[in-house]
Amino acid sequence: MAQQDYFVLIQSENNQPFYARIGPRTYSSSAQGHLIIPQLRDSTYKLLVGFPRKIFPEQEFPLVIYKKDLEFQLKNLGEKGWGLFNPRTLELKTGAVKDTVDPRSRVEGVKKDDAFSRMMAGIVSDTAVMYAKAPPVDTAKTVAVIMVDPPKDSVKGGSNDSAKGALSKQTRKTSVIEKLEEEKTGTALRLLYTERSKGYKTDTIQVLIALQDSAVQTSHPRLTPVKSDCKDLASDYDVDKLRIRMLSANKLDEKIGEARKVFDTKCFSTKQIKALSEVFVAQAAKYRFLETARPFVSDEHFGELSVLFTEPAYISKFKALAGG
Image 1 (cartoon, helix red, strand yellow):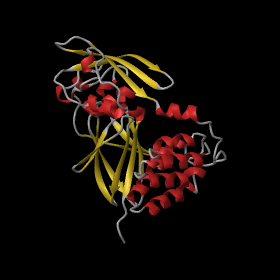
Image 2 (tube, helix red, strand yellow):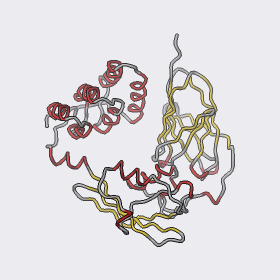
Image 3 (cartoon, rainbow, N blue to C red):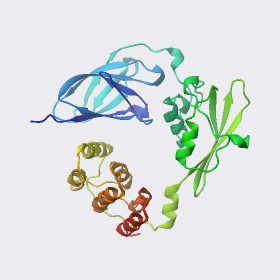
Image 4 (cartoon, rainbow, N blue to C red):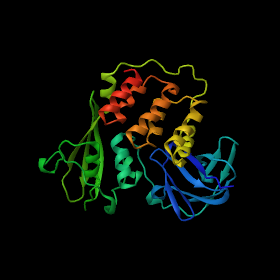
């Protein structure tokens, strides 16, 4: 029989970002401390867990895969270090410390979790910029910013992608960025920051992020719940597991089939359906998936997924499907 692939899902305590290493491969968690390690076989592995800027020592855990996927919560055990807790078996694994922590690398201050801070952390691959008193960014990872003054350095218009592209350009300045204001209107989120660079004057950074979802909400009436009598709602673990199964399938019919098996037993929120729809690239395939998912959505926001389409024909078809 062909070998089966399995995955390990790890969620850290207090959304602490981390990385994991198995053999030569390294996996980085999301900014919220969420990580999936895919394509594991029935075997025993050494799992090394570490943290950005080495704010905690690296630890090694034994990992045994035997005919099923695994889920762990990465917990801070204080002086004992970090442990992997299995919520299904209630087993707590403690790891062997592999290195020590450099006290100078600890990040102090209040963690910021706004949209711009998360984007900046992703660009420089360092969550230290999410803290109010974060140390200066390493010059090898410093990013250029959108300047309001002088005008010639500003980025006018453009999408979120173009703004992100401008931010990702490297500069030689070592910068400390501090958030001043945050204002949300009906159409955009405005963020105001200051940038202090050694040897340079303080500059102002203004970022405008269009809120496309808000436009959808104002142009379409709220839908009545599609599946309000759900007794079993899908968890994030269910979503991750289904996503892996769908990605493993080769054909569109097989991907839809994997989804339908789970839809018959659980209901999903619009947000979860949107995450699963990312498996499909073509507009036709995305529409077919949403058409299958429609009867199994547990909330009244399904119509907001029209933003997933760019072709007028599919936008129209989806609006008819959603009843908007």
